[in-house]
Length: 174
Image (cartoon, rainbow, N blue to C red; front, side, top):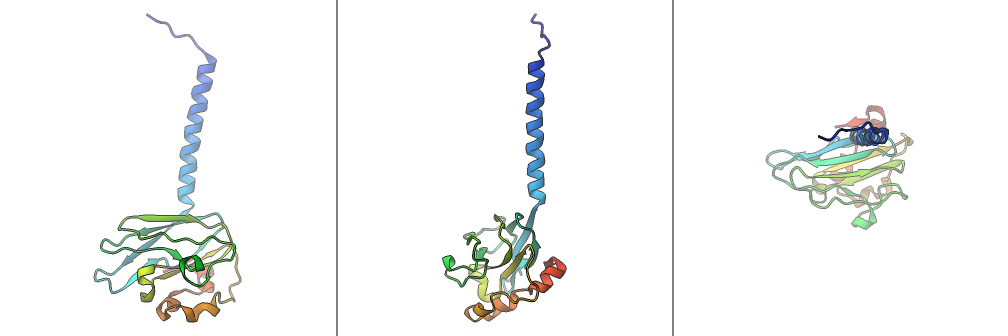
């Protein structure tokens, strides 16, 4: 029969491994708590589609996760940006994004590091007013961002954007 001897190095190694595991678990939970979800959905007939919330206030470094909650439809989350064939409606320094088509229960996540106002839309439903606005950090509530490009968008899209002032006041606009 083999006798186990007390080895302080073994205990130190096991403690360090447990600490790393705990740190990884806590970090993952902290990151998930810092992530905000926006759902994409619509009526059963498809006559009305939306992002909920459609207006959101977050802080630089926070992530947003869009989830397609509609069983019978596909959606995209696409920045208004020339890279996507649209006028620029995100901060100049920010990177453009396009989720591509998200099937039911699929999701898309990005982190927002640059302060400013970000407008986005769903490619197949922009004409139905499926748009959203994210305010990152501190911005001037009196400014109506991107007004110069409103005429380039469908009227339903322009009507769908909540005001910066309402987002700053309520933090989320349904």
